[in-house]
Length: 267
Image 1 (cartoon, one colour):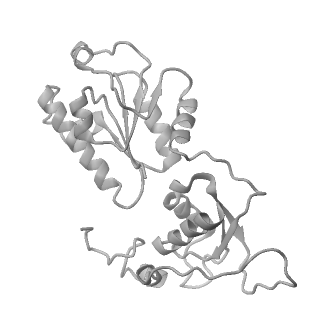
Image 2: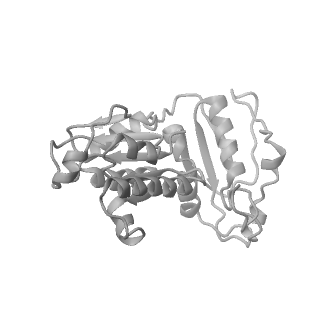
C-alpha cells in the first residue's frame, strides 16, 4: 500500500496547494517542509548537507505518522536524487509547472527526477487531486448494481477487527455497504452517534476508496426473510487475535482501536 507520499518540485510550483487539498481527501498527516523547518528543525539551513538531514527527518516523520495505517504527505523541494532517496517515498508526485523558482541556489541544485508516479504540468488543483487519486487507485466509482456485501453493526467504536471484516467482504464480493445502527446515546455501551462513527470509518477505510458506502439504519434488532431471495447470510471468521479485539475494552481504555494495549509502543 502506497501510504508515504512525496509532493516535490521547485518553490512556487504549487506543491503546498496540492498537499492542502489532497490531505482533505485522504485524511492524511501532513508535513510541510517550511513549517517543519521553522517549528521543529530551525537549526537547519539550505546547504546540501542540511538538505539531506532535512529529507531524512521528513521521511521519519512520515514513517511514524503512517504507523497506524493512514496516509502521510510531505511537500518540499527535495531537489536531488540523493535527498529523494533519503526521504524514501512510496509514491512521488512531481509538480513541474515552472522552469525556475524564486531562489537561484535551489534552481542550480534542482535535478529533474527520473522516477516518479505522477507528473503535473497543467490543469487546476482539483484536477491534480483527481489525477493523484486515480494513480492511487482510489477513484473507482461505487456501482449500486454491482454485487455488494452488507455489514450491519454498531461499531462503538470502529476498530481493526471491523476493518478486517470490511476488507474480507470487499475481497469476496467487490464492494461493501456498511450499515450503522442508530444507537448513539441509548446506553453506556453506545456513546457515539452516527456522524462520529461514520467519520471514524471513513478515516480508517480510506484505502478502500469508493468500494465502501456507509448508510444509517434504525436500531435494527431482528432480521427476518421469507423464501430464498438471492443472497447469502454468513458469519465471517477472523483470526483469534482479531476476534479478541473488543469495543468494550476500547471504551474502558484498556486497548486502542488497533487492538494493542494502551501505552505499548509498536515494535
